Image 1 (cartoon, rainbow, N blue to C red):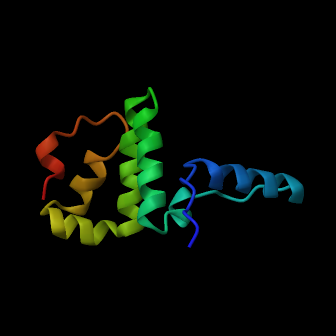
Image 2: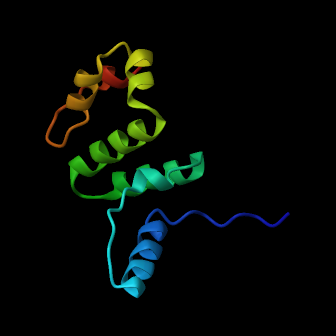
Length: 101
């Protein structure tokens, strides 16, 4: 079986924009729709960590949490959904222990 190539975290966005431009219309893009396996999620989070904006990683973690189910994550973490959304909002300053379950 051939070895899989490493996932490009922005490949999905590039493909989406290309196809949208061909149709001459853009529809709402939600990266969460494409985070369908662990490798893609890891590549997405890695790309966000490499961004110079510290909020990029919080947004990425929030997107992954939404993909996995925010309600279930809130139950697993012992946080309320509102608290979890607040902790993952841009500009927030979550502490390390907030995310250790």
